[in-house]
Image (cartoon, rainbow, N blue to C red):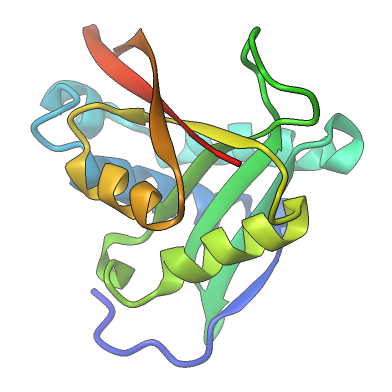
Length: 174
């Protein structure tokens, strides 16, 4: 739990960040998706496996046009965001997609997600079309995205997570 956050630095992720990103990723999922994603699945998330996947992803670098930014304070990983070209078949020209934005639950409500989102939007260009997918039952995230100019566009899909089919809603901006 973080009680006070000093100055937050946002920078590009490196392969050295893989384990810290994985730890934040898992803690965030376990907290944010409790009661949404099956508990057995959330308990089974393996930090070592997740770190290996992150290391592989980060080793690809910007060659795949995917960027991952991390937020840290005092040498502690607070959160991350990944974004790149939209993967949707009906994507608009030059549309970008936020693939993930997760924070250590102890940092929620301290402005770190806002700082990450503002940095992503600045890097992609304020007027660049942007989309993301969010679980329909994740009210906190949906509210956050609406505050940053995203709105549901009417497209939904079912995503299988931990043996459950969960409804995702696409949000767009620009």
